[in-house]
Image 1: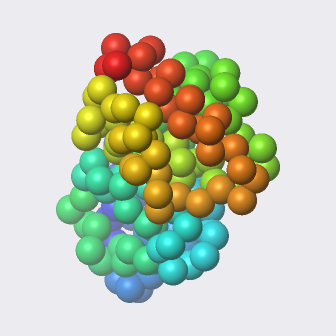
Image 2: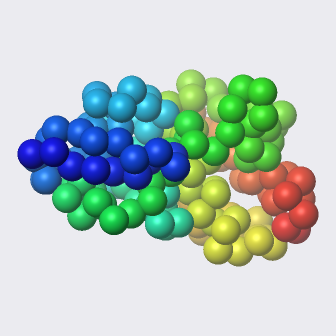
Length: 155
């Protein structure tokens, strides 16, 4: 079946079953590899994207439910020439070790800051509870999010 999805401001027509997880379409059909396959159960956060401004797990979200939605992936936040303040802060704080979870962390951070422009450290930590990092760089991730909030004039 042919489905239209608005991803990063562009409408894409893809041929897939309506129950196909968004993650598969992003990676396999659209070549957007920021969101990663982690657990496949929506529990680790590696596949987090924004759907109508809300952070959602793309590995469990069927595309049939998203035909009227605005989907933003890591690739839609910034560019190499003009990175989003969150991307710049993550680089500046060296908030990635292996990098596998980082796209999901950044997308969750974007949702946190959109919802709460002046987060405390506790707010950030609670907001990230569902995003897992096996490398143990959580403190640097939290620091990067707080620094991005400052850079964005939000904290």
